[in-house]
Image 1: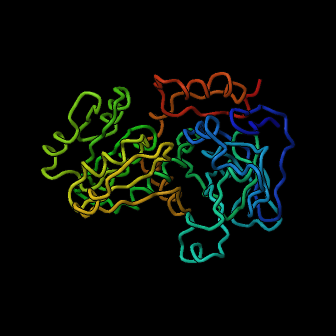
Image 2: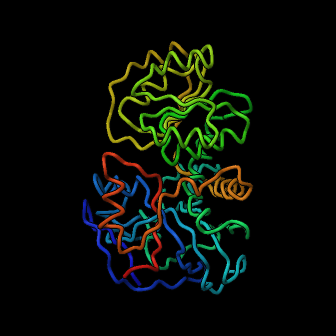
Amino acid sequence: MYGLVYYGNKNLRLENVPEPEPNENEVKIKIDLCGICATDIEEYEYGPKFISFDTPHPLTQTKVPLIIGHEITGTIVSLGKNVINTEIGTKVVLDGTISCMECDQCISGKTTQCHFLGTIGFSKNGGLAEYLTWPSSKIVEVPSDVSSKEAALTEPTSVAYHAIKRGCVSYNENVAILGVGTIGLLALQIAKSIGSKVFAIDQNKMKLQMAKKLGADAIIDSSKENVSEILQKLTVAGPDVIIDTAGAIETPINATEWVRPGGRVVLVAIYTSTPKYDFNTIVAKEIKVIGSLGYHINDVKAAINLIAQKKVLTKPLISEIIGINRVLTYGYPKMLAKSKDIFRILVDPSKHR
């Protein structure tokens, strides 16, 4: 089979690799679609940061070379001998996290804080290949009325859902989404489904127009408008919650300045720069600053249900579908372009010629 194999910084190769077979507790999945995520791009450009590189991951015993890809939907084609919770032909999405289930964090239900946390595509072979194997305990069935294309963004929807949950977003609250790329637009829809008023902030006109289309109560172009003044007019004291999905050097600072006194700031981006910051803003305003990493399996279940109920629309965020043979020559350059005019590119690994 063909797979995209990561060897190191800017060293990604399309190779013919052995087809995996499941162990007794795993299923073998034919990948229908796999998204190219910004984290994949960051790992390619600036990594290895998250991929197991010098030493094998302690839970999977895997290190580079490693097949990347973590936004996955596929169909089960074979079962390990102990698997009884599913059947061949079932369309699934994954809980792509890897945790020990034995440490204090896992026992308390905080699996994203496992001392040995790993993820598919970073700590074990991922979905930018024709097949993969995965524990049957970590698959979630896709409802029959949800297409593979719609389900392909379940993973980022799970990330967005986890961030909304971490921020304790509730009905009739004012929520600002700082950065309306894919995660931001999914978070916007989830907040709207709760009954929140949502304001989208970005510098990209295309993204802001999509935010408006998906239900934003107001859109703010931070390259042209005074965001603080507009938020004050919309809310009086500032939003109750600001969710930073942008990850720029200034955005966490902006979030703490713009949120209302006593409000919450959720940081869900991956930051590549370290800002200089005056923490007195947090002290004086008694703000809660909350980190949000990944998701739990219950977030995955909630995400696919929101997609099935059409409360979260994923199709508008799919810019195009390409074959795995075009990822390096077209997909990555498109994602790396300064004038990035896309949301998600999906990959069909069966198309490799």
